[in-house]
Image (cartoon, rainbow, N blue to C red; front, side, top):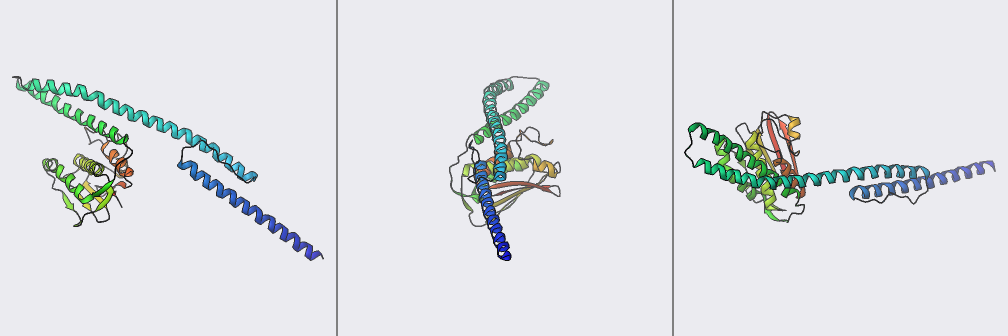
Length: 292
């Protein structure tokens, strides 16, 4: 009789443990599902469990505290990002009017009969004026890209867009004495993208290469939709290369730049569902853009 009682007690114990394990598994599945939902959406709803397990409820309570803090930090970041975008937009607009007036006065001065020394000073002012204008346009373009989250998609030939981008920079490359090495596939590489945004991405990358290139530039595009831009850049290092996509980041050799060009390229690439990354090895910078 005693062995049967022991077996019955063991069976009951195993059954109870199995029930507890099933309930614990169910509660963990609920936590995992609700945690994923709350991380992907901005919601104030706390996590709740249908199981009355003390330890699982304690875990859910702690996660609710962390989610609340995360939501607060996210809202703070989003508010700051909105304020920054608005400030950039306002600054770019406010600078355009006085810059246009200054350019007009400089043109009038240039028509006057001025001594050579004064004309040299005037040329310096004009150069600074052009640099200021470029900076303002960069700010304006960034504000436009940041305020346009939705991009209309259409069949876009990456090969054609890249060819047009290279042609538009031909004069600039020639002035720098750079003969680009270009390797493109024979067949079109068509993706559902926004051609204007892709052109902006490629153009900003090429413009960045013009600033930092040591005298060479190469670009390749394969049939899988991956473009690789590379150039010698001895003024960089792996750490600074990883920061090139950060807003307002510039290296010491990049004078006359806001550091927004590659930031805009990353912003547009991600909105189009692509990837972009920078790598520095053997004194050469590689920027890879993929639309798979």
